[in-house]
Length: 216
Image (cartoon, rainbow, N blue to C red):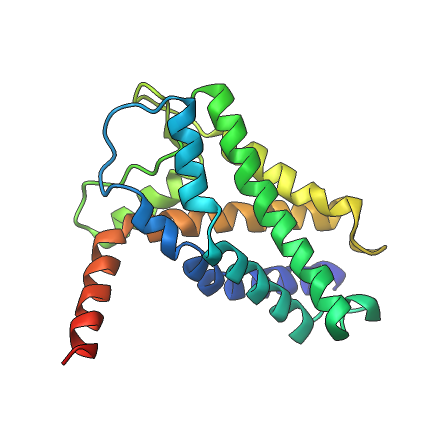
């Protein structure tokens, strides 16, 4: 029963995070060329990381996550993490730490291991195939030389973001079970970000149509 309730909580958190990830990815999907070419040196990788991660959207996503946790707190969550401005600050700090750790560790590990940080879209026109490609890219990405390779940076980022909370989360939530749950969510976040990147052309076209509608 405990496992079932834990899985329900995990799934509900992940489903809520999908629109949050979409919002927090909005700037970053415009920062990347539709079909990346060439190779990046470390300075260019760092610049790309800054443009796609150090954005207002990322902070907005963390704030939305903190608000969700306070609106639907886990069972037995301490009052200091549930009520008031201090609780919002703690949850904002947690969401920022998790996201920052995930993306920063992914960047640093990728740079050290020779992984290209950019998303390389599918050339298929089939939406299902494109979604499958985006999800697979979470686990198999590109090297600096364009070859397919195991995305070790994704595993490093997910592991780091999963266990970072053990340093500050309240008792009962700073254990390995919750850490593994956060690792699972991190992979889901990376996969959904890839889907957003994959459908960048359609999203941009939709944004342009909305802009034209607003101006008429």
